[in-house]
Every structure is written in structure tokens, then in C-alpha cells.
Image 1 (tube, rainbow, N blue to C red):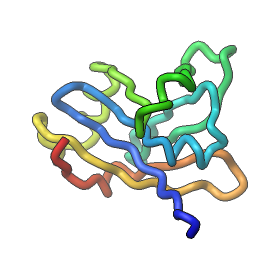
Image 2 (image 1 turned 180 degrees about the horizontal axis):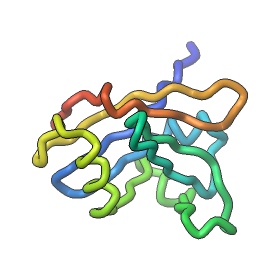
Image 3 (image 1 turned 180 degrees about the vertical axis):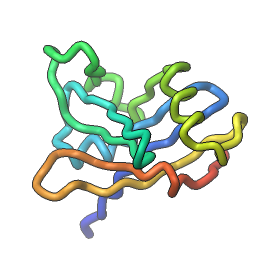
Length: 120
């Protein structure tokens, strides 16, 4: 049976941590580097492949994903910026956001208005 991959990220405001789920990375080709882009007007968050030449790219070590279900990124400033865009988010909570693949591009877009509160 073929499992349908569903792109997702988790944003934990308490830790400050962003988890990019393995399925999300797989859907954009399991890149070695990724870029995280935030559109404050549309309140969207995007994950896309990048390369080591981009100073804003985050390296994803394949060995760090072997026994994990996600790539973890700790960033106080990014979490604070996301929190400022989402006034309904509570500081001590974590949120999961499911994304959509942009057709014909290796980009996954997440609408922060569709975040679901989770226990993490």
C-alpha cells in the first residue's frame, strides 16, 4: 500500500523550535539545503530546496534524519517573527501546519492561518 505523503511543519513557541517533517523534505526532493521564506502579507511560510552558496540556506545532515521524523531548527528570532504575524497563537503552545505543494515547483507553502494547536 502506498502511503500518501502530507507536508507538515510544527512551530513550538515555547522552545523556540520549528520541525520540518521528513515527508515535507521528501516531497521537495530530499535536498541537502533548504530555504525558509515568510510572506508577512499573506501570512504564509514556504520551504524550498537551496544550495550551500546561499548564506540563508539551512544545511540538512542526512545522518541527523536517520532515526528522526523531522529536521529541527531552533531560532528565537524566526519564532518571534512568526508569533508577531499570528496574534491568535499562544506563547506556551505548539502548532502544526499542513502545506500544499506548488505545482511544477519544488516549493511547499504553509498558510499560518490554518495552524492547529497540538501538544508537543
